[in-house]
Image (cartoon, rainbow, N blue to C red; front, top):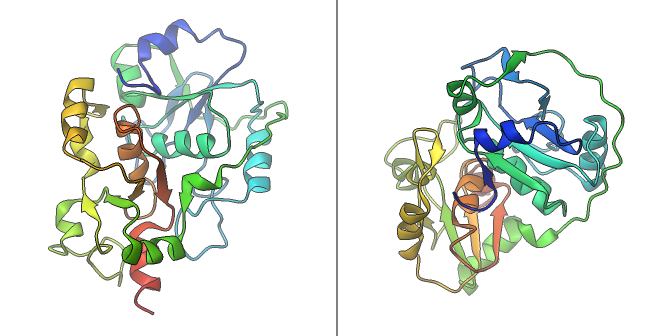
Length: 267
């Protein structure tokens, strides 16, 4: 198993750790399997509403440090918390949360490989969704701005070619063979970027083995910093997490991803 991942068996054994906090990062509209079920004791990490800048015209925009801290404290998260994050598709939105906490300086976070489906397959305990009220936490962020890249950086990189952009969308979207799912968003890709669909690092809702992932990333022969992009900054984090143990170069997420680039670079 790659770094930053834990198994359902591991989580079951560690449920009684007093510092453990389980976060359900499911995007409810997308992840309607097991819609009303969660791992017992899990807390809902609402990416869309509580952990994004909802004033941005682009989806899933990274929130301010203050906003992130306050939302974490409402969930009862402390600086001493050991966080396990999962989602209901196996692996989809949970790596985004892993990356967000890493960006905010909290390294004590791992992703449940296989998510809720794997947990249920083991017949481990679940409960019906209910609204939770938690003792206010003391979470304090230590923001690492180098984990995020913005439009101007991407624009300048086209000329400098100092960093390699890896696009996690499907090859059909990357090559403009099929339209973008967002209405009226043009198709295509960022110049000089390469394509690695996030599904290539997964199998049946879990990350592929270390050996298979190592073979995938061995083909990316570069010492340049890596910038991961996708449609709106969610699935890019899957590929970043997958390669984190294999490519020893600086890694970041283009937060606006193709949704932002397709609009701003055309203006």
